[in-house]
Image (cartoon, rainbow, N blue to C red):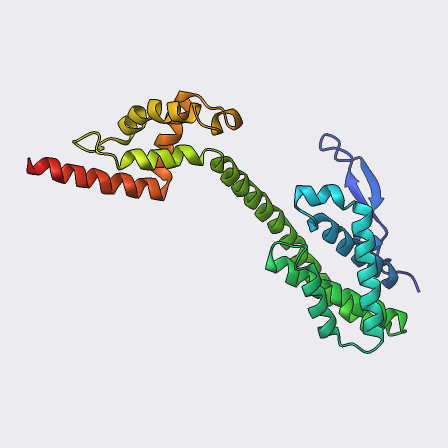
Length: 264
């Protein structure tokens, strides 16, 4: 019996010469010729790449754990779970174990869930094929494919989430370097000067910058975190605008000063 699908596809060589075509391999035909074992190998490769891509996001750990070691960890886990499944453990129980295993590797819960379900369907397909139940294996492969797509989407979200988390952590670390400047700002905001109270935030930052800069220059922080007076003023103004604590102290003190001055 002749195979019903054509193995080639004709495409135009160029838009300028539509009459000339070239024949290329048709991807639909190629996929249809792929064996069940080939699909299983593809699934294992995808899961391995996903695990290695999302594992050890922390830069310090990345230096300690090589890609080869991560591959070995995944392959050992896959083989152990396949043996457990073959020995009678339920697939649902395997999925729960996998989910727990990847909880330390993946940041997002959605990636943990989709990956553990995809890996479980892959294990089911692998075991059914090895046991001679190819028809059933094709059915579980279809289920795997659903979660392969979900896992791929979740991996992209994981990467975006990781970048966002890293940037926030870097911002907090950078901000912590100048915590003494922020503390000094709060201290100066509650002093009795000026008598009329703090009215304009930009003026307040400009007035306090020389005082706070001078104190910083004489402190132990100066050698660790050098900064110019202009940069101090910029930070003070930014805190007065964006920092909830500084905003609250500024507003409360300004109202209190204005109230006192209005009585005189």
